[in-house]
Image (tube, rainbow over all chains, first blue to last red; front, side, top):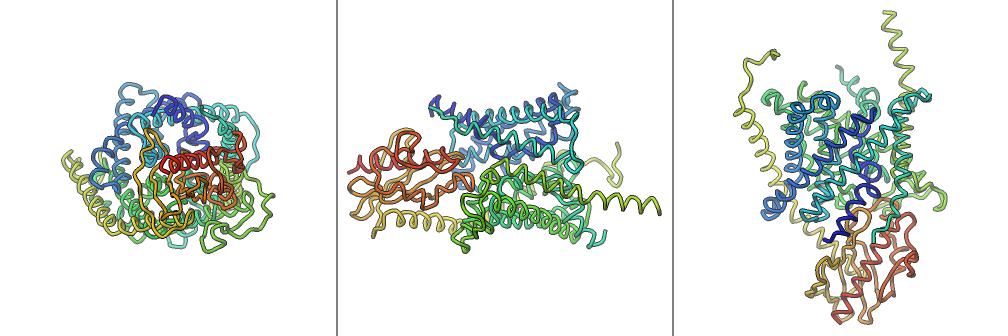
Length: 195
Length: 216
Length: 182
């Protein structure tokens, strides 16, 4: 684990292996909270926090409790409970200290629990056998990739509101087409060669 | 609500993917071969039905404040069972679906149905709800798989080890297909078209139904 | 806000008890299933490894030999395949995680076969690394193996340069490991 390997993990998570556009994780909130750039960036920040902290908390639980006791099969249950708890905590925190953001995110805040990207990153940390630092780096940069995706998408969707659209495609379908085109653009990053 | 209505709701009018817009991560990610589609669809159907049954059974005992956490634990339990079962008895499917099997835990369809149906209805109804919604999900998966695999790989029924060793039945010559269809962009575009088509065909029916209601 | 049908708000103790009970039941159930399935899962893995080894270098017996590739080595394990050569398991990093590969190396230091044990690469792209048409290219190679883009002789998979590079680097590491033990 050197600085360059960490950098490779980070750049991969944000660009070439972007959680939304390359790995299809986090689509539900991605679609749901991307109408306005402001709420999108708020959601993105919250996700960075959850992904980073979840990675940091799940790693020692797995490394010191689950694996040594052959309890690997409990990983899914343990991880999702930890994530649910974390999100609950953030909800309470935001409600007290940033109530406007709390209102704006609405139902989508508790939905971070079911954000595939959060559970996805924790599971990937386990299957890739990352150590603690690598896990946290992957978690945080994965979240940054999600933030990038959702903000990019929101800025396009804000403009789309003023465009004409075939009736059948209104709403979700045109959003999916947009996401598809951005995903196509992100493919360009897969040639990024890390020294 | 009659069983027939539950059936048509699950498959068409309240289709979990195209109408309720849930569970999209898996629909976009794994629909590259028919093997994946059927395997994932059946897995979700089984988990959804079993989870619905259990949640319906315990719905009166679970306090409202922690119900989501309890549902999640139950769902995670069934997901792990399916995960272990696949690893042991269908390792090819387990490898193919990879991370998306444990990710069924956070498939919004399951938690969504638990919250909106199983927690408020009896066991038999909830079980049927699980089966029908699961079928609706599987049908969309299969349609996506067929389209994407055909246009992106030129084959049909890929992934089954007993059909051409997993290569599927080749319909188009190897140089024809558009590789983009099995890449993320293809997933997004195919789903967009499917949802648009359903929105288009369901709308006149909705308007006709509304006119009927007004006339009555 | 009053809740119809409930006489009083459940206390904190009740909440914790219900959650713990449900979690305990789930944990016990899973433990049971794990006990039942674990032997079969281990059998599957062993069978897979055996098949992968036989596919790259058939031999009467495989004996694991100790090998230390140093910090960050992608070599998982090395087996002596009878008297005919070595079978090396490597895990280079592909597009989405490790591409666990079994490489057969003859006594002369050339590749006798390559088989992909497990991967999480994209279906239709990196996953095509498992196809014979790609893997067969590596047979007979020796020394440092790279894709054409990097000056070598291997044709990379369409749209899956990262996966192709990973396999090539895995094969190179395997050749190195075998060479160091010869």
